[in-house]
Image (cartoon, rainbow, N blue to C red; front, side, top):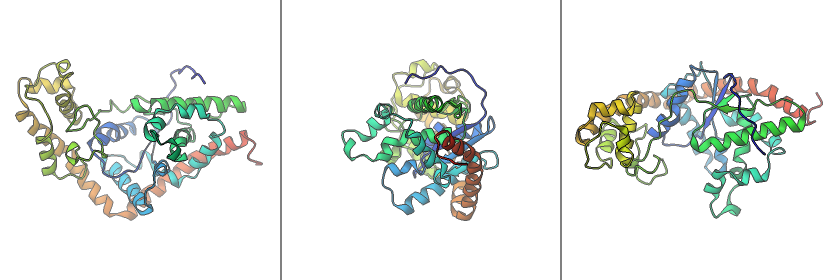
Length: 343
């Protein structure tokens, strides 16, 4: 169905989730996590570990549990403050799954068939893909609508999901004659998320699925490993220009300059002003030093937190209790609107 025109509304609550996969890397940090850190000072935020979404693929139980704790440790080590933001595991709030089932009556097969994530991940094996993968966008809508989120931070690859969430909210409200669900909008706070590319291929995103560990900077890499990976990162023989526009046809060079800009909180133009005319022999050591300065304290805090399972569980339990309290009124109202509650 056509989307309703988006009018500017006040930011009252921001919701975002991240799948608890292992091996966090620089792309995760600069592309999402540090943006979340800024958001928690700009608006009330809920950040969740999307372990229910991870059910679209089979993962051994002990692996999934360890990854949830590891991701929680990484988020806190990176600057997420559980006293400012609500941090929790999705599966600890049963209302996510229950509201997803209620919204399955509103969502339409045609809408889900058009989702690019479904097309990309199922590929030619749609018959063998899990129902959870197909229904992933409806659960994502439930994640957002459960908390009456006014805004959701999204990247380019997630815009279709927020549009589907808006469609579901509008149709549910129309079908039930209510204004139950807040129709969310994209959140542009938290600064600009950096798009970090592979160190081996400037045209591909940095990814944990890349078979080459040299393609990414992991948050658990030692200072020496970080320096070695930057030293061996693919570049070209040309010196750095003074104008960012001149990097458009140089993807590897543009990637490294973009990483430096994100790490030092500068513009690409400011970075190039410092290194104009110089080659990567001068630039790479400076980039490695900047990355080590950023990642070393995160790595140390992460290692400390990961060893304290009881502390991590306390953070997640407290976050789940707060999220449950926020979500229950919406779930009950949705059940009443559908004739599923006698109270």
